[in-house]
Image (cartoon, rainbow, N blue to C red; front, side):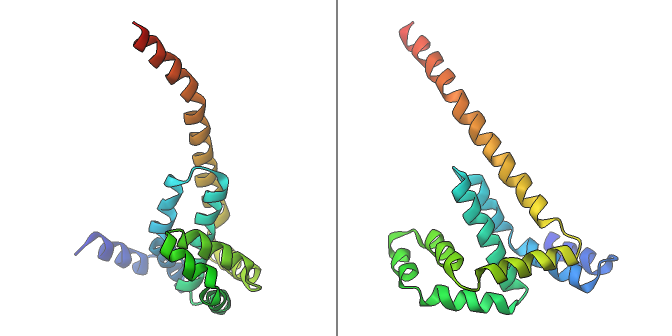
Length: 155
């Protein structure tokens, strides 16, 4: 048995409802997307990761709202063009946000999270605030590092 298999077994044998199991498994499949927050340099990039999480959850949970947004993204030539330039993820998120179905997709994900007792917004805000605090600390320490480096270089 692999750890992933054991994890799935424990999920199905617990007291979770089928909806909770489905949501938890969908959330777990989005870990790679969520890990992207650690590479973000600002709030705008963080929100792209968050929105990618919502898109992934809507896809995994087979929400009809996903189909509407996905069709708009696929039809957006800017997304196809951006893949060649390496900025495909960002353009995909921007295109999804511009879709008339975007608000419905976000609402569907948030309603499902609430229905199964998941604090999805709280989880995200913990990641976002933690990353922004880290970036502020790192950026705040930079002048001190430069001063120390200059002192060392001068001796």
